[in-house]
Image 1 (tube, one colour):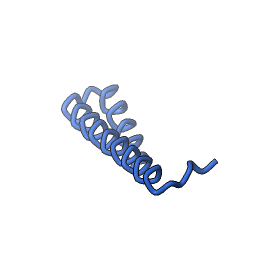
Image 2 (image 1 turned 180 degrees about the horizontal axis):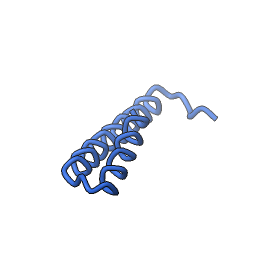
Image 3 (image 1 turned 180 degrees about the vertical axis):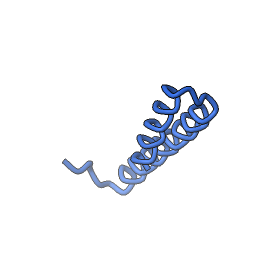
Image 4 (image 1 turned 90 degrees about the horizontal axis):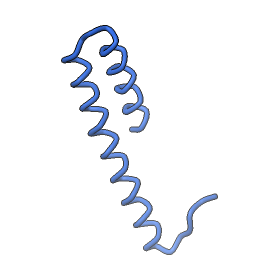
Length: 58
């Protein structure tokens, strides 16, 4: 999922440089949403792992 965020960020940057503001805004918005979903899933994963009593992998 983080890979999709990076891909959409790159698309947004390229579209912004080329002047496609509508495409750049849409790609950046989608990348932002996917990034926040990734962060929420990460926090849920860490909390559930802590509740089960397993420590972080090193």
